[in-house]
Amino acid sequence: MSTITDNNSQKPVKQRASTRRAADQVTPRARIEHFGFDGILDSIRAGKSQSEIAKSLGVHCATLTRFLREDDERARQTDRAMTDSAEAWLDRGMRALEEARGMDTAAVQLARAVEQACARRAAIRNPRYSEKRAVELTGADGGPLQVQPVISVYLPSNGRVGEEKAMDHDS
Image 1 (cartoon, rainbow, N blue to C red):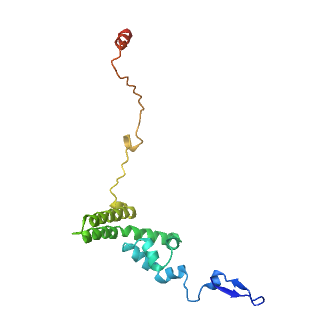
Image 2 (cartoon, rainbow, N blue to C red; image 1 turned 90 degrees about the horizontal axis):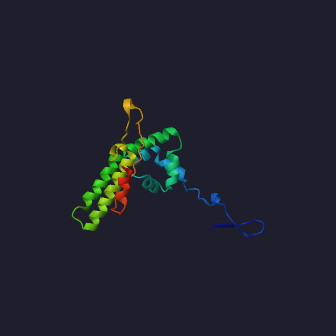
Image 3 (cartoon, rainbow, N blue to C red; image 1 turned 90 degrees about the vertical axis):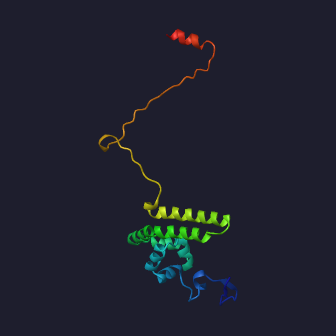
């Protein structure tokens, strides 16, 4: 903790964080702006995660996310870069599998898990890479599907005595 002394009493007084910050210390926002928005988009397209980019810039991931979502145009460009990055994520997973070739079983299993995580991330970033398909059922002429509820009650025959008589009595 940095302290200074009060001129009148010579007692130590705590400095505020803003006055403690060295003149050469750069704010997180300045680090992001120095790297540049285009540089961040290129990193996203190359398959880096936002946490990896934030770590390389020395900022918190939330700070980077706020910067990327600051206005509609920047958010749109970020979304487009993420969509474009899906192929890079698949490549990243394949590299992990290739690097594990010839290694022990544990390393191969780990590489498979990494590959699956990368494939999921690619599917999240670009729905074209998803194995899930949306299926929509429609009725006549593309309208809503007509549904008629049916209630069926099944009474099992458990072979109890007297059941045959009750059935004969109903006839």
